[in-house]
Length: 305
Image (cartoon, rainbow, N blue to C red; front, side, top):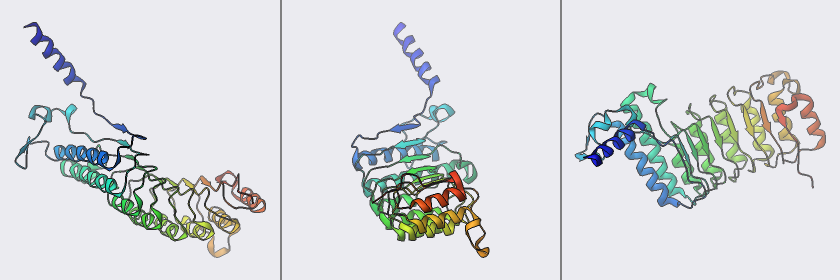
């Protein structure tokens, strides 16, 4: 009848659309760990469908997607590209759920496409968990599941030196992550030591934000030393870290060989932005930094007591 015809036309129109959700923004929604667990479950199910795309029967259970749709590239199981979950009261429990989901998505891509092609497969590329409370344990869980993530925001999560250590260890072997934000996490010189060590081996990270921590001069010196061997980082944010003249001038020397001795002439020519705003650098040292490296280091707006 006429009704059946309209229904068929609607189905055809819907079939032709075939759009997939690529960004999910749930910032400031208070979804908590239970909400994250639900999202993680959906990602894992999509990964299961991808890994078994040639068969509607999986582990003895029938998929909720019909075999016809599995054969249509427009309805190929997708994974979110951007997952924005800042300000949601997520703890280490939620971080663990996300870790499992991210790992499942990458494994599924490798199974269905192979290791090389999987690098470009749909998976969560941007993960925003800013201003939650995942702590050190949450950072440890996520550090094991960063193979597909290109942008990670863990700002203000209380991960501390313990959490940053796990992330730094992951950075040593990670070639995918491009932007890492770990500002406001109570990281001290102890944690920045591990970050510095990772910078001597990781040449793929482009942006690192360690602002609003407490690495001090000792942490700045460690980072400066390993920056000399880094050719990948373009932007380094060290605002509000209690860094004084010693740390600032050591960072300056890492960028400009004119301030170093003859045995330490190796310098970083790739870093274009090093922000040291809001630290404890004197006017005299600020002038010296500007003279030697110009706009590559931002030493404006220092704290004065």
